[in-house]
Amino acid sequence: MDAIVAGDGFYADNAEEVAISQAMINRARYTVAVADHTKAEATAFAKICSFSEINELLIGPGVDAEVLTSIRNQGVKIWTPKKAFKEGK
Image (tube, rainbow, N blue to C red; front, side):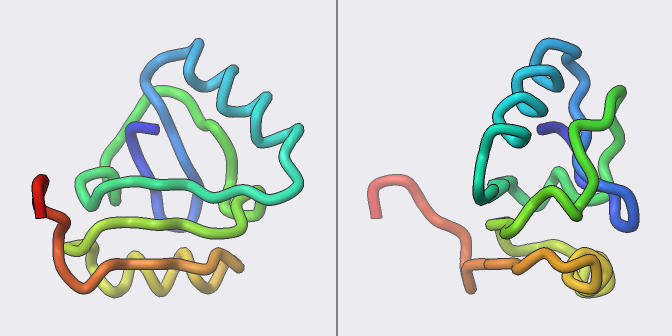
């Protein structure tokens, strides 16, 4: 996943990644997306899925509160750590 677009869904730049992600989502009973804050409001080529296809999103700190609210309002449970993870700690 390369981008999360509030009001729309999840996107990627690689067509193969999109196809594989869509296949996994279609077969899953429950879906959790994981992304760092840089993916929020980024842009990418092809849509993977809309928010209605994702149950939960784990995203790093630093995402605008309005973006998170928009995603929550579309039924996605959001988890954000209070601080960024530092390797080795």
